[in-house]
Image 1 (tube, one colour):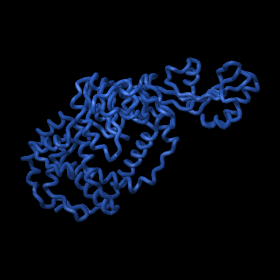
Image 2: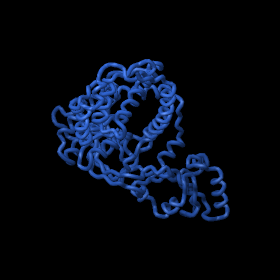
Image 3: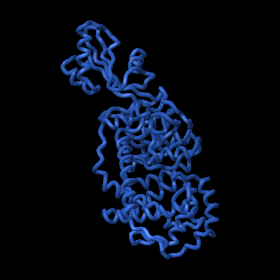
Image 4: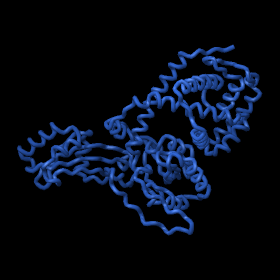
Length: 444
């Protein structure tokens, strides 16, 4: 559910009217609904109505409040059956994340909704029910979900239209943190943000504390697809608007925040964001019948670029070359041929130095920021920039981690997690619908 300061302020005014409305008559501790023998009181219903009013939830708010409380009871029942619990730390993290959507601290958010008569416990219960349900779904279905490399390739490809749509111009800071350190690092990030007064300040801070490769450029990224960012970061960027700094956001590997330098509706995939992965296998003999016959033999054996390594075994190493480059950096003759190919297809239209070029398109993606360096291959040592001059007592900057930051697009692990979450969401919806259908729901 998206919220903003203006939404919150308008919701507070509307919620004021709710205080004296018909729901107030139910604001007591008698049961108004029973779900599998567990009561929902008039007070709880009144509180949920006020809370949804503050959030300006679309639709019939009293009906949504009823439905939400019924489903929360069913979710917590399922958690008990599965033996699932959540810790206060998990709930606190969820509370902080929810409040950050309105650019508020948890304390500020609780104070704001309190003006509409919403108790802090109502907010915490709302967040806790969502967190515990997520854990239930992961326990019940998590081991059943297998995401293949082919599915990840497909999700990252231009064919899946990844890279189309809104584009953003950002500066980023990613502060590395273990899972147990996220809250502390988030608080530190919030303190640092308070002292920033523009892009120059942001760049200096990035050079000191960011572990993303963009640190060497003061955190600055080129134009890139909004979908490079995790869902929570996308939402924060859109809500913050141009010129603003997002609140700290928990991301894989740490805490991130962004300076929004530009936003555009986007649309079609941009050539500057497109990276092509392609292989060239050189076959001696130019366009001779023997070379063309060998090319057709290879075409019959190779369904992907990975198959070419086995085919090239025993040949001189320089005969097989595989590269990944931003499209504008690909030689024109190769780019023209690649434009006609789908992934796994090959062309034999080119020759080079007396050899026939068996050119295969391995992958085409559109997730890199314009001008970004490519993410190094796994296992490659990342060159670290020179250490800056530190003030007395100042901590040195963290080591650059190529898997942090968003200029080169999401990592395969992040895309895998996205696909897992998509599957879990579908299974969650079906499972909850079954539980609701089986529940005994009564009203006095």
